[in-house]
Length: 520
Image (cartoon, rainbow, N blue to C red):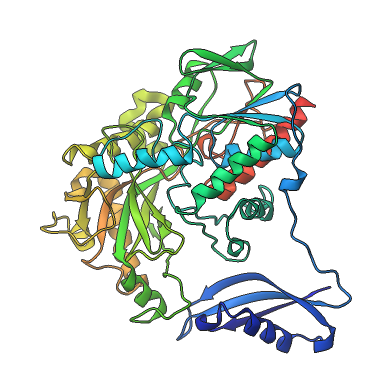
């Protein structure tokens, strides 16, 4: 078997493959003439010592061993013809697109319908949000080709190893234009400047193999007969019929949840998290994490992961974006929602992270008249309160971190990456009191764990509220089909079964295989 080795190298040497290869050979038990190939398996940063180092895992092959060849998944796709059964995929995010690729591999024709626009046209609507404060409810940072991850970072880390093949999902991204680094990095990342091209390439692959993709197609009704879904209504007018339906609409499609209830499709309330986004100067985070005033060459912008238990509740950092930007992620006028993103180089002078508290049904008692939608209305009420605190644009309410903890409005605010701008506001009064009190205690605890984190140079920005769906659309563990509606397959983040690009992609693949079983 190939020999697996682990060793550390200095950041300055991380791009020197010849040096890494020589170190691998030196540490190997094999003699030099018997070594044929060295493969990098994984790399991560170890910043626990006095100086940060890269930890590498490599595989050394002898001349007797077969050198592995990377699989080509695109070559396995089959051309679907128009006579085969049709599967309607609702949503062109990672769940929908990876489900479509899997269906093509299985010889099934996918027809994808997406309420938003393709990645190219979508850019104009993002510019309108950033610069004009105008929110298109069908095309924004959450809705449109590629889903929420396309223009809000493209982080690929997941713990969902049991959902499917992470390697296959990552390899497919590489085959469509992502850098091969994502195959070895411990926390892979593509970047919002490069992911749109990858998404467009996936679209072309689907079309080249006989699939269909229709943008500006918003589902306005489900056509259900005798407990089976047979079609969907599009834009309140035309109908589209199919043999099976994969619902992959993402965690912010509130109209789809309402439609499910109207059509008797059972929903379940589920916990989610809500809070704020905290932005620091990136050089400060670098100094805290690396112990360096100026980050040395070869080191990426430093990140962090923090968690604190406050009165039995978890408060944690979420979607940390080193060298990143804070962006407006509202999906309707009259609300303020923020998210974080990074470009591929992660070279912004700012670092930001969601800082959120877990919430569940006991926190929604003021909205109990909304029934199953209590959590969604609780979420929505906070977003609307944030908007009401502003000037009618997408400027976000903010405080210095120290003022936030002390419960006083800031007289001035530090510089920020948030393009629409910030408005000094009493977030300690706008947020529900229990959320504020838990966040206040947690960020002080974070300051003890990361010396320098608790600083007046950090902005607290409201509100981070779309961490995941407040609802789940249930499905059978065996068939992955909704227990009450035949041929209806809820999938991805919007159904409550994923959280991030890769877990959503793998869930789409898994559901596609379940659809194949159903149609066979």
